[in-house]
Image (cartoon, rainbow, N blue to C red; front, side):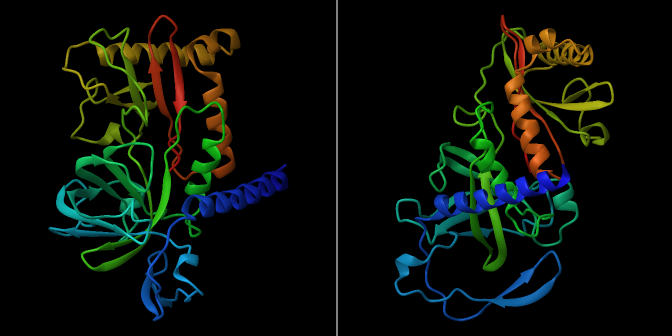
Length: 324
């Protein structure tokens, strides 16, 4: 069984590489003939890399370059937003932009803690925009480092594989970029969607009635030990599991947090009953099965469940992808 899983994983990686080539095949780049100094931040080894000059520039199939000029050092304080301007080059002209204003800050937990210079970032443009042809037009985007994956391919392959499954309503887009911050080359980053309520991301609707509203909650073990968060407002516990209350934004005392906590407690008890007929009435089985398949094949370091909970006449919990 282990050999079969390894063969499947290898096949999926090949498919991911093929899809990556398809997704990035229209990108062109300035031809570089001189060696470019770079650092492998996983090993701190210095090395030079080259991009060979092709017969014509149109044949270059490499990643776009994202340049960020920040009014400060974004890799030091994770929670501090820093005013910045953004320039995207080395792609088709219709996708390029220059001098776009916005802000950046750090993100992540272990990937922030265990890295030194190459750390994940959040982007918030002043005005909503699509990036590299992604479906969503939004202010919010993410730059991932793939710190624990030397190939840098696992998340990208997982996203592409998940997008082929029928049971998942949404998976993040994925693009590779060369990232430059304040003139310094930071390496290859994965540019992807922020996890937010959005018609082209997590499509949910809010209501002042807790029994009608839809919700976004996130399994997050870090919240229980975060002194800045309040239980019953920012998060709640079901047994030994801690869930962040992410959406919709509501005033304390509105009853939304209490409602979704009660609902999740009911879902938990129903699953433990092992009564499939009852379980299928409170969760979207297809989405949970597909999510399990992706997690089992790609083995993300921090397994998390992104749940959309619809509490209307037909109450059910839908599992969405959170693979990094």
